[in-house]
Length: 467
Image (cartoon, rainbow, N blue to C red; front, side, top):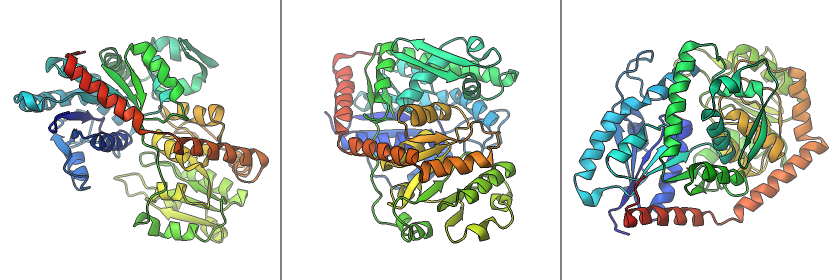
């Protein structure tokens, strides 16, 4: 393989998509490739400062203004749900700067990329790849189960899936056989199927999603053998092209800045497998009613905890002020409230951490699984409902307390669920299962999938198989 050969990576411009693409970039570099990582100007500037090495080049693309979004907005951070959908359905505006860059790169035939690996949410990149004669690979940043169900939902008539008054949506397609609650399907489609703007954006997205899958040369999935990789088979069946689980198993972080934080020092003082870690990601922010309900349930459970509470980005809200009066004082001997960011991976891998209360975003779910930590889940939007189903029903390492971004959970249910997960026999069995999954992941040879994939894309160049 020539030293100058490289691949193009193009994620959707949200943190939950950029993070797994960065991990993929590092894997490809480990195979001797150079990576051109395309993103918007602000994101590229932030990523460039991380000094990830000379083999990963961050290419800034200027996103034209999108009506309905703040001027200068070129990232999904701090956007509302509806604004996120607008950004997603308008991301095709990056096609012109993308193709201008491709024109520059391919003007020298020796610099032509081996392939373009684009986010499944950026289906319009199929046309660009075809125009320049470059094979395109689809990358699902969610897990294989989530990718399979989203593919089924986004390639079947929307009206048939979310019409009716409730019940169960039965999915029966090739090797994909399972049931989803009607309410979860509605939430996956944005929680408000009566909104004309949302329906229009969803239809645009569905079209792009279908295009992305039909014309790909291969599929990569952000998951591991031993978690939900059996669903990769469905992705192969429906595309007729090879698919690989490609995630890198997470390890206990090395000693460093994040391990020296106050919350890690506090964990060092706690008993092994005794602490509940509570965090709901970087893009979901709890309301006053939700925080109060959680606080009452956590306090009543009488279990040690670390709770990361984040403020909505761009607001003057101090979310810690929503805590019930006296909560911090009443729990100070067994709990710790952190206002803002925490080193999540280091907390999950800490021997004192027993359980993770989470929104079930895929990156957080994968971190918890790799750490061998059981979960209490509250899925709120999109694929989080599918991830929760995987955790609770298939891996059987979690319990659910609520669902929906605008719902307020029952404090009594929170209390009982925490106790069940932390100190009752059910929780002990979940913890044992989580530990066994962690061990199986650690024993697997992750790099064989990466090597096979790289050999495949090199063969595409050799045989000039363009899709």
